[in-house]
Image (cartoon, rainbow, N blue to C red; front, side, top):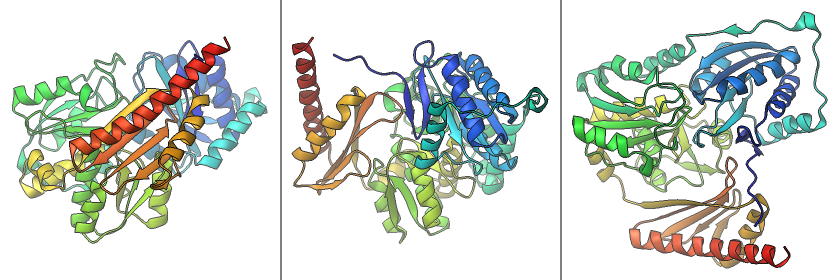
Length: 462
């Protein structure tokens, strides 16, 4: 079998395993390419807490400075803070050093443009072309300036959230909240944020040391400690952020994970109660969003997976709320980026306004069952695999904008190659567990048969 490639270069940036595919030389060259791309402008840089952050950041700073960029170092901050600071500083762009939900041995560079939004597909291609060509601007010594540091960027971010909230309503509810920051980028500020809203806060995993106590992806199997803490303390709600704090998952008052899809669902419900307008989500996000929007007389638009795809559609539609069902709430009143603080603010306001519990709010929604899985597949296998799946489901409704989304009346299947990991992701949703499991088993069976054939073929010529 062919080895799995751990370097991923995509619309989402460049990421890899430190000490293997992600090397200082590669990092410097990508930073040089970006510095050349932004014409030696002002660039904002922030990191999450990974233990490799200093090596990666200094390589990035070196590359940027060598092209004549002016650089502001934000230190350890959430990715949405980087995005907001780009706009606040009128910067040319920004780089976040974070591998988001990937395991601790990974790190990555996420590239942003001057409006605080990820590079679009064609912009990312232009950057990668500069990287491959190696024709970087080389600044003379007189143009190389010292790096400036900004220590209050995260607090500017929080203050912007407060200005959009009905803080007094939340404070009157006096909610007890457990928050798990996964020792990530928001560890120092999230407890402060919730306390300022009048919550009684039980913080766990808030040491910003990059030693993740559990895998940082905020999916139910990684929320055991949070669930136990909610039950132990009798909390009204539990929040968990991923390593760079752009994604949010929620646990109800019984300690049961409600699924990261509901972060966007609760946010959508609150926003549409107060302002009607379009909603934009990606193809993998729950069909519950359509049901919520219909109830409020609003329309939903869907895009390929990827924050920039959702954001650009939100701009086109003048959307009032949007996001990705992986826990990424995008509240354009604040900024056009996934933001766990937006998710917490909107969920807390919904609890305060309704006086209901999290489980009551969830039960009031139409019920769907979503199952998510992934399997390691080499990049060269993925294209042939998707062709086979397309042929198998050829008599169904197929959306091929991002992998394959197959609509089957009472449910759907979305099969796509990840841009951030060497995996195929399979998401299914139906109105009952039995049907959802059947859809998942069928899709995974196709993948397993195809990859087994590839293994046999590889073995026969070895």
